Image (cartoon, rainbow, N blue to C red; front, side):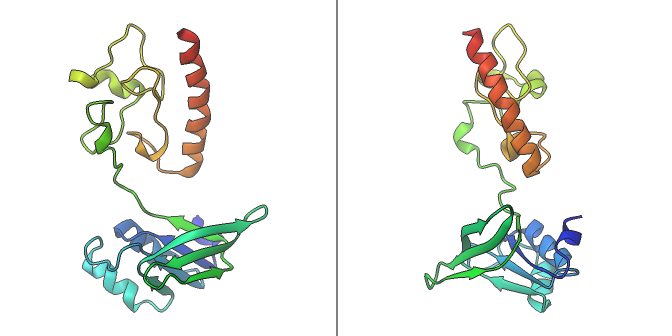
Length: 190
């Protein structure tokens, strides 16, 4: 669906893993140009060899290493993107309306271990998913955990860090709105 929205337009894919590479290849079939922005200096450590080769050989994909977005601008929708080459320090502004961020498939929750329950991949368990949590991360109070509540009563998790998430911005925003309501409910209990 997203590819249809970008037809014959320039797009940006941010990321250096297989998901980013696959997205860039897919979008290059319909987009005028796909800029692949990668924070690191190479893809070989994070992407399959065949995918790296397909990206490098694709004239519709322009690869930018050591580059990250430093600005987004627009009125009612995205109109311009500013990115910076970290090697040279040079920034450039591009009239682009479509950005796909394909970074962070790993939840980076190491710092939460022992504090809240996480699954075997490190995603935070919430609500009913806590039914099987054991040990120090198990649910410890009489009431059942609320929908987005972690194993630490009154602490909530939403978005991509949560086990069972759907990895969409809209759902993360919705979960955030629900969490605000649930936080108020938890505070009223005290």
